[in-house]
Length: 459
Image (cartoon, rainbow, N blue to C red; front, side, top):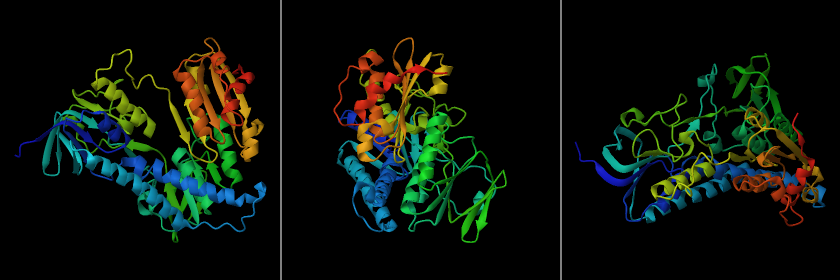
């Protein structure tokens, strides 16, 4: 047997936590980076970068259609699907190449291509190479779930990866699932000119969100022609000529040219042979970690989607920052932890949804006496000036402490404005302190302190 290659640090996967971690590790220590798939992981190749590039193209198409509202003549609007996809590929390949160049430029980094499996504590095999590290970091991400739907194996179907390889615009895209990925992509393809039908088994879509938020998102998308079938599960799927037919449990039949399945994600832990390393997982396969991303195995850490403590690029990057604090010996009073961060994310429909903290059900379950304030976007001057008046802002406050519990900003620039509430929550600001902040006019953000004028007890 060959002698194992020894490194100070072994990183499995090249998702967004990896670059942050490498940048913070000592330059004099050896690092092996192992990747069996595309450099950059989900965000760069199949997630944030390509999809938000498509969102931008779709938004331009929609604004062009609305040109007359702004006194601008645009004529007939035609979407060049191949050109939009080419632009997406240029952006995402540029991001991937940039990360590849970053790794190549680091003299202490060895990039190893292939899939890694543990053969023992802190020891892995990649092809015919065996490597070991003083510290091992698992950053292998997650992938789309293949749900147990009758007939699915017999039809061509798309997930969030394969949908980005389409060469022609679908005539009618049928989407199973109505969460964030499903709605973002469904909205994009509708704006590109496809018919879109979204199917959701649950009583309402966006199960993390309050019912009023979910219903407003649905109304916004319906106004642009997205169709919904909500409240009945899928009984089976089958070929329908050159397309696909989906039959629901209530008997409804939806036929389309293409099928996108977006019903959840699962962690990429099944190929790692974690049992050989003593790394524990939960019942869903996510690696269990403590507040510093440490696993049950000494010297092994898990970052990003695979630890189940966040499914976003920003939480992956924060995981790496937390770990660097831990490795660097930052005093406990100053070190960041993953336990202390508030949940924050955005959905990039247009307008976007920004969310931070608790929703109404979570706040009630936690025992808070909740105050709620809601402000419609159509009452905000900048939104009216921009012609972007759909949606609303909702803020939840603890009646006893006067501190923020959570916020939803569904509307123009909601993905950016939500940061005001995230900052206030992280700083422990009361609403009284938040009201003292003066923000520039005319902006969407300037009205956020005034939202609090409408605080009332949550029924």
